[in-house]
Image 1 (cartoon, rainbow, N blue to C red):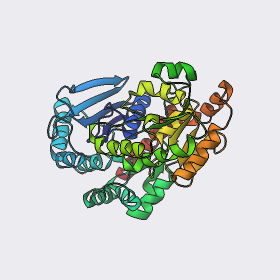
Image 2: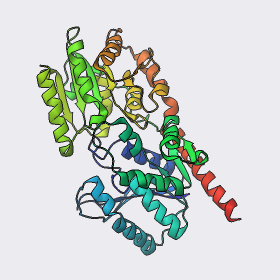
Image 3: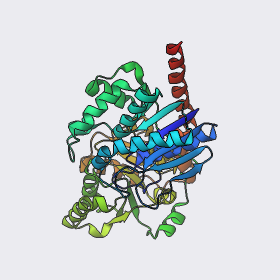
Image 4: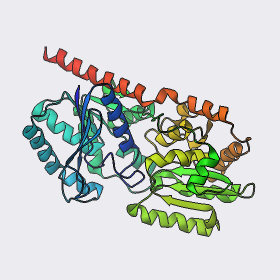
Length: 405
């Protein structure tokens, strides 16, 4: 198949852990790579985020990344991207015309890109499938952080009705689509996210710590965007409850200039709790470095209020590190409580601390146990996930041929 991926607002090769670059970017890049390995041709379209962005670059076999002008040639606020969508769509249409490009199917990511997919369905009759990654109505229902605009929710409703198929990562997200958007159940397909088992694998703990300049102490790890929805403040509040038992350090990976205000709040909280010397904010880290962080940690903690799936726990487990996480996304199916980690009902500091205490009290993980943790997530290898996505795309194309006939 010839497939156009559209990710208008977020570049799949952007810095992970920034405000608008996270799990979705990993998903797009890894899925495209695996589909390319299977012989499909994938072009990923995003907007120019920096004047030095190349117009087109090869990412891997059969996969190209193409930057199109939409608004300023710099990073802009997410809603400003929405108002630049007409320019993005116009330039994308012209790019296809100028280069004689045709695609079998369009795969859009996030609600803004779905609007672009709708345009090409209406004008070129190219079927589009979409993945929202997060849903505005669900985020508003949680009530943490800024409210999502009514414009977003209206656009999600519109494209949910028009697209040929909606890919969701969890059964929970499917139920959210039915509950909040009255989506047609028959067009929702549940396909989980994946993990790159070649990149994320165990590194000997002391080797990893020496590389990262970490001491011989108990280490808790958080990886992700610095955002109120991530519940990092709750994790910081667990530290006084646990430090009386161990020499303990919390390492926080993620954050950029856009998250400075939230980062300052977290630093202020650490000072108020008098644990500032035990909380290490590392900022942005290249994905290639993450296996060292996961392997250096004793426990990876995911205290989120909301996750559409939960890539970080998959990556940690693939590196042999147990995970404590709230019951969000698909984590209840990924983490085996008491074996590979613990699921907590909510992110209260007391409940997080209780599960972290349980895992830290276990004897040091030997190599065999680390690889048993890793083996528990092998079915989420991207190779398997890409095959399922390809099957869903073929079903959409086959159904279109039947309807035309």
